[in-house]
Length: 616
Image 1 (cartoon, rainbow, N blue to C red):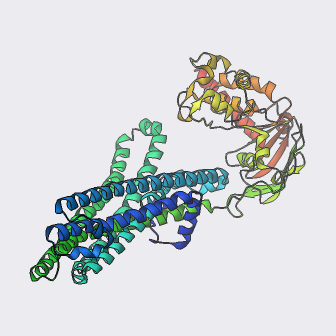
Image 2: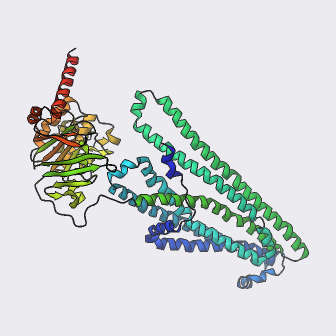
Image 3: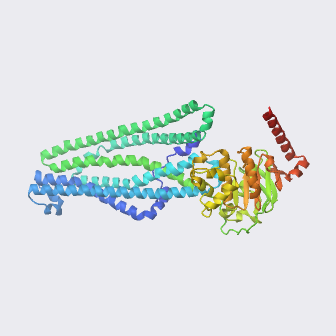
């Protein structure tokens, strides 16, 4: 995958984009009660964290140094006992209660935000997957699968981190910072300003940290995307890798990508390794300044011991939210970039849809007609040029021609995977663009050259989630394609586990299963796209025998290179360079001695050569 393919993955975006934030918040709207509770808990937690050091000032000034400064605590001071032992016990109990309450508040806040974040991401991931299912096939022609997987997984996980540990936590950190500043200024503004004097150093360290981590995280995302793409490609093509002894070369290429990922993570680790100790050193510098200046104030009688010790504690706490905010900066920045990519996917228009008022489809028919159809995948690079033909109900039409002639494109247009640029395709006299899309595709059973099986059971692969298909109908479909005996011989029968892409089945068995899948849904029209090219001669004969019974009463379109499989077709359409060059029965086309005749002669000669080789 080239660097250009990763350009979109590398973009980090703004730290805050109001448009994206408003759109993200819409997903939290159904859970606004939980979000409100989390905000309230955050406010209470920040308030407790702000006032807890004051307990030490009260204990020291009232019961230890007896300077009388504790009078500033108002109602709490008035209710505390005068006896130092009793009073300290009361303050210890209050402090312990405050700590337990703080723990409960933070636990509840974290639990609510994490659960809410997961629910929001569940909704968003569900919407992304639903949108992906409705996008036209042309979109998948332009976008690699690895990138789309990243949208539905990594990018949404990044948003979850922002929801769960970002927004509410940032609000809490800011509240605590404001609270600390206000209390410190009220206690002693001179010591407060002395403590704040190291903030420029914090600012410089944070800016440098953000710059380093930003670059490191960008590199890690790019490296991970490349690792995923490499693994997806090579694991899918492992048979080819092993066949051509490319294991060592693949390992070297993987090592290069893996080295990039390791180096990027090392840079991120090093950035964290020096940043947090640097913040601690700067915090210690602020504490040293407070101890130095505050000690002088105590010696001169200008300030109480409790105030200086309290300042010591506030100075320690003051820098923790700053550290957290520095970390949250990177999370929020990555979340903005992830949200932009996810919303770009969701904003991709669904160009092939059902009309607002679909026309009903006549029952028990199946007439197909192409009227002056033109189609191009790009601009005016026409793949099909002025195609016109009709197929009556119950007829079989065979489409033949060289590779790239436009055969499969005809069936893709019939199923509305793409829409034509010119002309019309009619099903029972109704333009297919005027039909409900689900209803249109329900009329077809299709068997492709490369059968695709899902992880699950044999029954689930035949049924494909259609509730109306019973096990009896599945069994009948398997019998019709001569696969019943094989399934009955399996230990679990219809419940036999099918692994990813049907890894436990032979190519012929997978093809027969795809035949059974098409037939179990009782389609009005059959499309067979090179359906017998992947099976051996014996299996092909079995399929032909089954098809003799199955095509009866159904309109069928057969695409085939083996002309022996299409000789009984009612009409054969000969495609060449996107044009319908010949049309007729097998005998009529042979008599014309045109393209079909040449194809037949070439294939017949190849078969003769093969037979002679077998005899030798």
